[in-house]
Length: 366
Image (cartoon, rainbow, N blue to C red; front, side, top):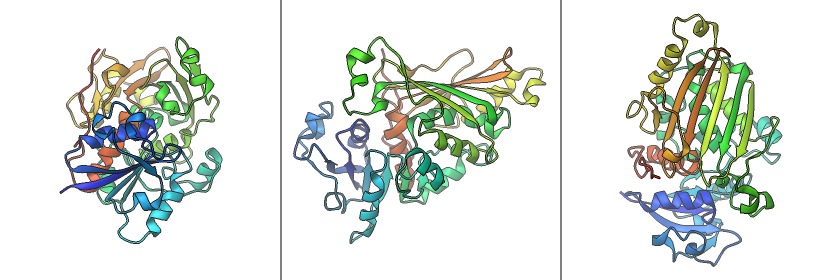
């Protein structure tokens, strides 16, 4: 069976990456590609790398051009998807499966949405992270079951994915203190979007690292807290320091998560082995339990170049004896596992397909 998919926000980075994956997906045919300011242009003007789609005309992002497809993927700015999805749900005919790559439907707490986004709350959809643990369970079966029965998918934030995948095994096993989690992320410039801003130009970016949203203001913070509570942290227990830093690479996230270990780890004969066993049980190592998450061999550290262009995440955990802390590092491509690959992976589950269909699992080098 073949499904048709429209992509809204098709001229942006996230929309382009979604199209790149869907163009090679064996069960999905791309329908309308829509945007706003670039209506009437050809897609190749915005994504010259998408050769097979270069002659497609960009149409308006409205119900007329999105309805009638089996699937609609929304790669729109935060706060925009809610109105579009409401209009699609009211349109005549069957409502398509909706996949939102923006933030509008990620948060379950309306107050948290209002605090960090400041617009009308659009409600929560099924969360598009198949690997999300539930209440300390050793495998993410519950999240996959939810995705398999949904028609509304909220794709996680890219930074959220990196931090959640790094930290959740320790939270689920009760091995790290959720009240003292510190995260520092090196983020590629595509994570800041495609809009032209002075600090994003090459003359400002090359040869420089720029922190942003410092001091607890980043919009991904409540989403990470939400995920770690799902994984087993008590409500209100998570305290998170979150510092993203733009670094001169086009795409990728390297997240370093540091958290004090619990007494059980400190008292263990081999704290490092105890930590690694917990991550091993969840992720299973390279080629193990999670098809898109690789716990690397001991002594090997994640690098963004190894996952560029893929839907993979690589993870490593170590024990810092001097600080009595766990140090976990996760590398993802912010446009891959951080956005488009997560959308396709979750969509596959909703369609009843093998979840890695159309997801790129081999990187490029150098």
